Length: 187
Ligand code: HEC
Image (tube, rainbow, N blue to C red; front, side, top):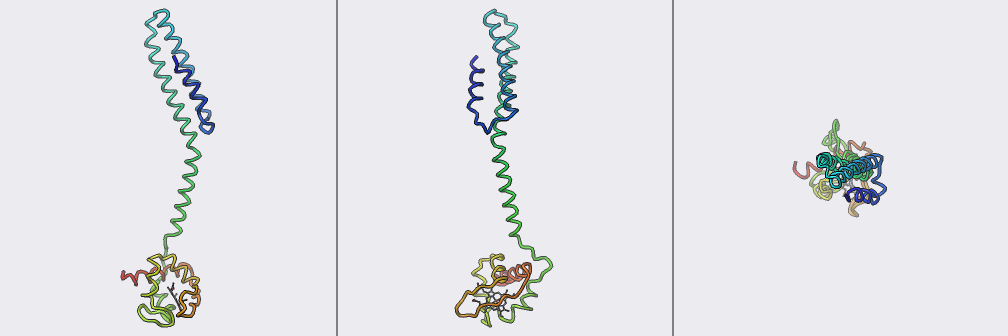
Protein backbone atom coordinates (compact mmCIF):
# COMPACT_ATOMS: atom_id res chain seq x y z
CA UNK A 1 0.00 0.00 0.00
CA UNK A 2 2.94 2.27 0.64
CA UNK A 3 4.34 1.73 -2.85
CA UNK A 4 2.53 4.77 -4.39
CA UNK A 5 3.96 6.94 -1.61
CA UNK A 6 7.53 5.70 -2.04
CA UNK A 7 7.13 6.05 -5.81
CA UNK A 8 6.03 9.65 -5.39
CA UNK A 9 8.89 10.38 -2.99
CA UNK A 10 11.45 8.77 -5.27
CA UNK A 11 10.19 10.95 -8.11
CA UNK A 12 10.74 14.02 -5.92
CA UNK A 13 14.34 13.12 -5.05
CA UNK A 14 15.46 12.26 -8.59
CA UNK A 15 18.03 14.90 -9.56
CA UNK A 16 16.86 17.30 -12.28
CA UNK A 17 19.42 16.01 -14.75
CA UNK A 18 17.84 12.54 -14.67
CA UNK A 19 14.34 13.79 -15.49
CA UNK A 20 13.00 13.24 -18.98
CA UNK A 21 9.69 12.72 -20.74
CA UNK A 22 9.95 8.96 -20.46
CA UNK A 23 10.79 9.10 -16.73
CA UNK A 24 7.63 11.11 -16.25
CA UNK A 25 5.54 8.75 -18.41
CA UNK A 26 6.75 5.58 -16.69
CA UNK A 27 6.20 7.14 -13.25
CA UNK A 28 2.64 8.06 -14.21
CA UNK A 29 1.94 4.59 -15.61
CA UNK A 30 3.36 2.96 -12.46
CA UNK A 31 1.26 5.30 -10.39
CA UNK A 32 -1.95 4.49 -12.25
CA UNK A 33 -1.43 0.75 -12.13
CA UNK A 34 -0.60 1.02 -8.41
CA UNK A 35 -3.88 2.85 -7.82
CA UNK A 36 -5.76 0.05 -9.60
CA UNK A 37 -3.80 -2.43 -7.52
CA UNK A 38 -4.90 -0.66 -4.32
CA UNK A 39 -8.49 -0.77 -5.53
CA UNK A 40 -8.38 -4.51 -6.08
CA UNK A 41 -6.61 -5.09 -2.77
CA UNK A 42 -9.27 -3.02 -1.07
CA UNK A 43 -11.96 -5.17 -2.69
CA UNK A 44 -10.16 -8.31 -1.55
CA UNK A 45 -9.66 -7.16 2.02
CA UNK A 46 -12.84 -5.22 2.61
CA UNK A 47 -15.37 -7.26 0.66
CA UNK A 48 -13.53 -10.58 0.68
CA UNK A 49 -13.77 -10.70 -3.11
CA UNK A 50 -11.02 -13.26 -3.47
CA UNK A 51 -11.43 -13.46 -7.24
CA UNK A 52 -9.57 -10.12 -7.52
CA UNK A 53 -6.41 -11.47 -5.92
CA UNK A 54 -5.12 -12.70 -9.31
CA UNK A 55 -5.65 -9.29 -10.92
CA UNK A 56 -3.95 -7.61 -7.96
CA UNK A 57 -0.96 -9.90 -8.37
CA UNK A 58 -0.59 -9.10 -12.08
CA UNK A 59 -0.97 -5.39 -11.42
CA UNK A 60 1.79 -5.62 -8.83
CA UNK A 61 4.09 -7.16 -11.43
CA UNK A 62 3.11 -4.54 -14.02
CA UNK A 63 3.70 -1.73 -11.52
CA UNK A 64 7.10 -3.06 -10.62
CA UNK A 65 7.88 -3.30 -14.35
CA UNK A 66 7.03 0.36 -14.85
CA UNK A 67 9.12 1.30 -11.82
CA UNK A 68 12.10 -0.55 -13.28
CA UNK A 69 11.59 1.16 -16.66
CA UNK A 70 11.39 4.51 -14.90
CA UNK A 71 14.68 3.86 -13.11
CA UNK A 72 16.33 2.78 -16.35
CA UNK A 73 15.10 5.91 -18.12
CA UNK A 74 16.32 8.10 -15.26
CA UNK A 75 19.72 6.41 -15.29
CA UNK A 76 19.96 6.79 -19.07
CA UNK A 77 19.08 10.48 -18.93
CA UNK A 78 21.53 11.11 -16.09
CA UNK A 79 24.47 9.45 -17.78
CA UNK A 80 23.76 10.72 -21.30
CA UNK A 81 25.89 13.85 -20.98
CA UNK A 82 28.73 12.00 -19.30
CA UNK A 83 28.73 9.41 -22.04
CA UNK A 84 28.88 12.14 -24.66
CA UNK A 85 31.86 13.72 -22.90
CA UNK A 86 33.61 10.37 -22.55
CA UNK A 87 33.01 9.63 -26.22
CA UNK A 88 34.43 12.98 -27.26
CA UNK A 89 37.49 12.47 -25.07
CA UNK A 90 38.01 8.99 -26.52
CA UNK A 91 37.83 10.39 -30.03
CA UNK A 92 40.39 13.06 -29.17
CA UNK A 93 42.74 10.46 -27.71
CA UNK A 94 42.28 8.29 -30.78
CA UNK A 95 43.16 11.25 -33.03
CA UNK A 96 46.22 12.06 -30.94
CA UNK A 97 47.36 8.47 -31.16
CA UNK A 98 46.93 8.49 -34.92
CA UNK A 99 49.04 11.65 -35.13
CA UNK A 100 51.78 9.85 -33.27
CA UNK A 101 51.89 6.81 -35.47
CA UNK A 102 54.75 7.22 -37.85
CA UNK A 103 54.11 6.84 -41.51
CA UNK A 104 57.31 6.69 -43.51
CA UNK A 105 55.91 4.93 -46.56
CA UNK A 106 57.68 5.86 -49.77
CA UNK A 107 60.63 7.52 -48.03
CA UNK A 108 63.92 5.77 -47.46
CA UNK A 109 65.69 6.82 -44.26
CA UNK A 110 68.94 5.09 -45.17
CA UNK A 111 69.08 6.91 -48.50
CA UNK A 112 68.59 10.26 -46.75
CA UNK A 113 71.37 9.45 -44.28
CA UNK A 114 73.76 8.50 -47.10
CA UNK A 115 72.87 11.57 -49.13
CA UNK A 116 72.80 14.27 -46.43
CA UNK A 117 73.75 13.34 -42.91
CA UNK A 118 76.85 11.27 -43.73
CA UNK A 119 78.73 14.46 -44.56
CA UNK A 120 78.83 15.31 -40.88
CA UNK A 121 77.86 12.12 -39.05
CA UNK A 122 79.18 8.61 -38.74
CA UNK A 123 77.86 6.07 -36.28
CA UNK A 124 80.98 5.52 -34.21
CA UNK A 125 83.41 8.30 -34.97
CA UNK A 126 83.21 12.04 -34.60
CA UNK A 127 83.12 13.93 -37.89
CA UNK A 128 81.71 17.45 -37.87
CA UNK A 129 78.88 16.29 -35.68
CA UNK A 130 78.90 13.80 -32.81
CA UNK A 131 78.82 10.04 -33.54
CA UNK A 132 75.27 8.66 -33.54
CA UNK A 133 76.28 5.94 -31.06
CA UNK A 134 76.58 8.72 -28.47
CA UNK A 135 73.60 10.85 -29.30
CA UNK A 136 70.81 8.58 -30.57
CA UNK A 137 70.43 6.51 -27.34
CA UNK A 138 69.45 9.74 -25.54
CA UNK A 139 66.18 9.64 -27.48
CA UNK A 140 65.16 6.31 -25.98
CA UNK A 141 63.60 5.11 -29.21
CA UNK A 142 61.31 8.16 -29.45
CA UNK A 143 61.22 8.62 -33.24
CA UNK A 144 59.01 11.72 -33.03
CA UNK A 145 61.33 13.49 -30.62
CA UNK A 146 64.37 12.75 -32.75
CA UNK A 147 62.53 13.82 -35.90
CA UNK A 148 61.68 17.10 -34.18
CA UNK A 149 65.37 17.75 -33.54
CA UNK A 150 66.29 16.84 -37.12
CA UNK A 151 63.67 19.21 -38.51
CA UNK A 152 64.66 22.01 -36.16
CA UNK A 153 68.13 21.42 -34.71
CA UNK A 154 68.85 23.27 -31.50
CA UNK A 155 72.21 23.85 -29.84
CA UNK A 156 73.02 20.86 -27.65
CA UNK A 157 76.69 20.36 -26.86
CA UNK A 158 79.36 23.02 -26.28
CA UNK A 159 81.90 20.68 -27.92
CA UNK A 160 80.28 21.07 -31.33
CA UNK A 161 79.10 23.87 -33.56
CA UNK A 162 75.32 24.05 -33.94
CA UNK A 163 73.84 21.73 -36.55
CA UNK A 164 72.39 23.58 -39.52
CA UNK A 165 68.82 22.66 -40.46
CA UNK A 166 68.82 20.23 -43.37
CA UNK A 167 65.51 21.36 -44.80
CA UNK A 168 63.87 17.94 -44.68
CA UNK A 169 60.16 17.36 -44.99
CA UNK A 170 58.48 15.99 -41.82
CA UNK A 171 58.02 12.59 -43.41
CA UNK A 172 61.70 12.46 -44.39
CA UNK A 173 62.73 13.45 -40.87
CA UNK A 174 60.54 10.64 -39.49
CA UNK A 175 62.09 8.16 -41.87
CA UNK A 176 65.69 9.07 -41.13
CA UNK A 177 64.98 9.22 -37.38
CA UNK A 178 63.49 5.74 -37.51
CA UNK A 179 66.45 4.48 -39.56
CA UNK A 180 68.97 5.90 -37.08
CA UNK A 181 67.16 4.54 -34.01
CA UNK A 182 66.79 1.08 -35.55
CA UNK A 183 70.42 1.05 -36.70
CA UNK A 184 71.88 2.18 -33.36
CA UNK A 185 69.74 -0.26 -31.39
CA UNK A 186 70.99 -3.00 -33.72
CA UNK A 187 67.67 -3.83 -35.41
C1 HEC B 1 76.70 20.34 -41.79
C2 HEC B 1 76.92 19.25 -40.85
C3 HEC B 1 75.73 18.43 -40.43
C4 HEC B 1 74.84 17.78 -41.22
C5 HEC B 1 74.75 17.73 -42.73
C6 HEC B 1 73.96 17.08 -40.30
N1 HEC B 1 74.32 17.32 -39.00
FE1 HEC B 1 73.47 16.51 -37.36
N2 HEC B 1 74.76 17.56 -36.19
C7 HEC B 1 75.75 18.40 -36.64
C8 HEC B 1 76.41 19.01 -35.52
C9 HEC B 1 77.54 20.01 -35.59
C10 HEC B 1 75.77 18.51 -34.35
C11 HEC B 1 76.07 18.87 -32.91
C12 HEC B 1 75.06 19.93 -32.50
C13 HEC B 1 75.14 20.33 -31.06
O1 HEC B 1 75.62 19.52 -30.24
O2 HEC B 1 74.65 21.40 -30.75
C14 HEC B 1 74.76 17.58 -34.82
C15 HEC B 1 73.95 16.85 -33.98
C16 HEC B 1 73.06 15.90 -34.41
C17 HEC B 1 72.33 15.02 -33.54
C18 HEC B 1 72.47 14.94 -32.04
C19 HEC B 1 71.41 15.77 -31.35
C20 HEC B 1 71.52 15.70 -29.85
O3 HEC B 1 70.43 15.70 -29.24
O4 HEC B 1 72.62 15.64 -29.30
C21 HEC B 1 71.54 14.24 -34.35
C22 HEC B 1 70.60 13.16 -33.88
C23 HEC B 1 71.77 14.66 -35.69
N3 HEC B 1 72.68 15.66 -35.71
C24 HEC B 1 71.13 14.13 -36.77
C25 HEC B 1 71.36 14.51 -38.08
C26 HEC B 1 70.65 13.97 -39.22
C27 HEC B 1 69.57 12.91 -39.15
C28 HEC B 1 71.16 14.58 -40.31
C29 HEC B 1 70.73 14.35 -41.76
C30 HEC B 1 69.36 14.63 -42.09
C31 HEC B 1 72.16 15.49 -39.88
N4 HEC B 1 72.24 15.44 -38.51
C32 HEC B 1 72.90 16.28 -40.72
C33 HEC B 1 76.08 18.65 -37.95
C34 HEC B 1 75.40 18.15 -39.05
